[in-house]
Image (tube, rainbow, N blue to C red; front, side, top):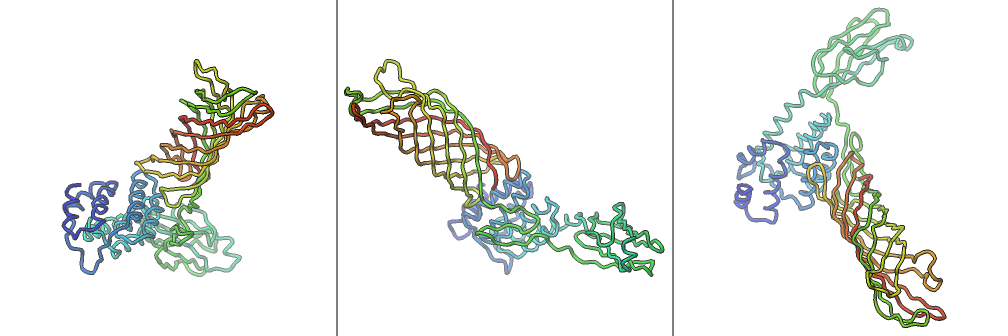
Length: 442
């Protein structure tokens, strides 16, 4: 890291100097070649290639894409690299996008990304020449990609229905069947069922479509070759970059559901007024027994690591027990609680899992115990806020499990008025919650 910082400082100082240095660490997932790129980085870019300074958001998406690649989630890596490129073109991002496509078996898309990596604006380190050298090496790997064999039958309709097509060991196929994917090399294409068998040996080339045309009056076949076009085309929808084909199409919508328990709850009941004709001004302390909690949220990911939305929590039994030695009549009993909050969540990718911070705040309603005196059946209403820390593990691209610990604080009150009671009662408290749940979507 110190070497990266020294080289970075050799350039005119900019706010992005630290970002460029960090990007060397972000490429760790590419393996040992990153070390050689650091050593080969040139102080002056290649002639005609522009140097670019990534924005903070652009670099953040790049880092997340590198982490997804390292975790083996190549589809997510493609989406994140595409999103980073939407904010700004960089040669290193195109290079890694191409490698992600290659890992998915999407060779034409990889070839397109490699070509763009040659001409896109460059970062200072790794140097443009080092990135181009890596592009050349990765392009050589594309020679192992499969090609396609497409068979057409230029014969009368009644004969076309009888013909059976074999491509190597694959078949039989009808005339006009979808192209057959084959490894590079020679393959024999045969047509049977006609007046006489027809066959043609063709050479399958990586990422090329070999088109074989059988004709009824010929014992040979016409062979045409054409490159396979990428399936995915970049398009923009709601400010996000996705692939129209061959890739995931995230909507940004997240749904969470969770269950858990409350622990270490402590509450205080402050009363000012009269109850049943007696002065009840004062306060009482209570502890909360562990109880069940269920919750959920609907959130929208504004960017890949930050989402906002709304949440709801229900605690069917809030068991408040008067502290030892406190004989004052207060909020003793089993209550029920419902919270409705706004929520914001920030995720921090770490290899194959993510840490996240969550903050919530909103309304809280606590209903009195069943069987309470009619004068005291008014619910407590107020506000609450919560801060939580959790860990998320991705079991599938759109399904994650999480465990969370959070601290919650509540401040509620109610007014009781009857023939013999007139008081204001404030119930405040805090607790810890441990929850386990699922995140769907994203």
